[in-house]
Amino acid sequence: MKVSRNKDRIVAIVGRPNVGKSALFNRLAGRRIAIVHDMPGVTRDRLMAPVKDASFPLQVMDTGGIGATLNDDFGDMVRIEAEIAIAAADAILFVVDALSGMHPIDESVAQMLRRQGKPVILGLNKADDPKHDLNMADFGRLGFKTVQAFSAEHGRGIEALIKACEQAVPPPVVEELVEVAEDGTAELNEDLAIRMAIIGRPNVGKSSLFNAILGTERAIVSAVAGTTRDSIDSLYVHQGQPFLMIDTAGIRKKAKIDTSVEAYSVARSERSIRRADVAVLVIDASRGVTAQERKIAGTIVDENKPCIIVANKFDLYHPDGQMKARLEELEEHVRRELFFLHYAPLVAVSAKDGKNLSKVFGAIDQVKHASDHGMSTGQFNRLLQEAIERTPPPHVRGRRFKLLYATLAREEMSRPIMAPRVVLFVNHEDLMTPTYRRYLENTVRHSMKYDGLPIRFDVRAREKRQGSVKDLWKPAVRGTGGRQGRRKEDMAVADKKEKLKDAQRRVTAERSGAASESGAAPTPRPAAKRSAARPAAKAGASKRPSDTRKEGRPAVGRPASAPRSGLAKKRPAAKKAAGKRAPRVRQAPQKRAGKSPGPKRGR
Image 1 (tube, helix red, strand yellow):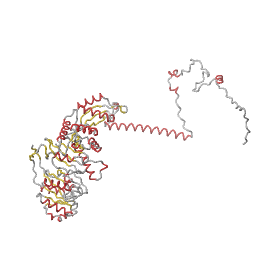
Image 2 (image 1 turned 135 degrees about the vertical axis):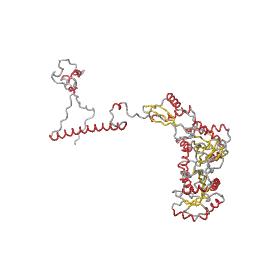
Image 3 (image 1 turned 90 degrees about the vertical axis):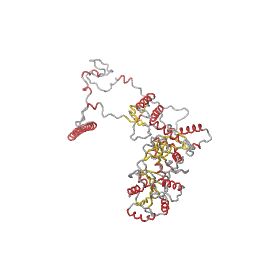
Image 4 (image 1 turned 45 degrees about the horizontal axis):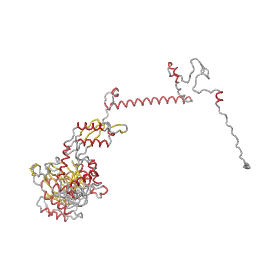
């Protein structure tokens, strides 16, 4: 298959450890890709990125430090990676330290570069001040024609360095046809490629899977946990579909992270999850799902990313058992431990033996097909309404969740694989419980299989209308309208109330002042009589039912002319005497027989 592409020229950055190669790589790329640290030997793998301010397509490649002996058992592997970068590059940027001066390792690296027969640019890093440019004479004995002083940290001399790199590489080729195999690497447009991030805890075989798919030793593989530090991007084509594969560092528990370099590596891995289209969660089938895998899976769910689960090292999982029984037992274990990723397809592979690697892309194609063939807005509304009628939502604080309308949100940036996002317009967003949310999600999944895709419900409350029907009858403030007019009207009403209160305070103060001048206490206002307030026509209705006297006949116990009072009637003397209880007579205690009272004791 022939693919039309723009050929980018490559410049490889090489040098001894801790001279600022990764800082220069980030400066030329215009973003933080490589980890920069004072500890030597941080960079191990090759990293590649386009130069931001280049006048034509130009790629820069970062490599690990060569020539020095480090106690991390990765010196030979790093040197091999640097040699691969030098062989693939069109020009070489040899970086040295301008402050520390010439080093014996610099001389040995220069001899190796002269044997390559490629253009070499000698770059003096850490030249923060113009007076540091005088150190160029010290490095003149290396024998390179193009020498450029710069500061990767402060950006001094970077423009001149880019121009020197453009002059060193061969003229750019605008467009050419490249022969690309159906299962091979190629340099294509990254915007059209599916970004798949390989995620997992350390030492589960992520880099081995990465190299096995590419068919080359692109990343350093070791039995030591934490070998990979930077996130490595590599373009790959499978059956005409381009993929941008991202190999990431292993994510350990935060309590076990003991160095700042590892903390930076974990941060790069989490950022790779956010920029990926699909997350490939790699687990060790021989050890099963651990608590750290559940945390990483929770991060994928929180980022709302499509996901597939790859069980690596399947050749070590009950090797003596039957294949069907092994697969069923493995799937039961994974579904039980990662129950919240029940929608993710499961693939069992062996990266070491290269078995079932094509099934990984088969699962990704399954996820892409589910993303391209979703439900329409009308189908979503009918499905959710039927689910609500079948199982009504629960009452929350005396109120019930009510769905008004549902629609599928459209993202601003279109990607090859996108998870569906459903916007629900409801009466009140707090009334939708998590259990009912899961019920709606399961209903949607039962009707339409979204394999590998999370379904996100964005609940939005109904917007309150500005004002009400009563507000239409209020006179509007002249010259204003809407919210500003209502605010001015409320302020006018508040001013009227305040003026009325001030007038009442003044009247009260004047009355109290006049009473104090006369020397007498202010007389309280007499309470209005109830009888005066009642109408004359209802005077007869005020009679109590207990008062059974007839009209014109005086009541018993009081004269007819006497005004009626609220006091109780006096009881007649005869009745009072009859109802009085007889006084209680206290009897003297009787003496006990056989005992004489003792003598009286004096004081």
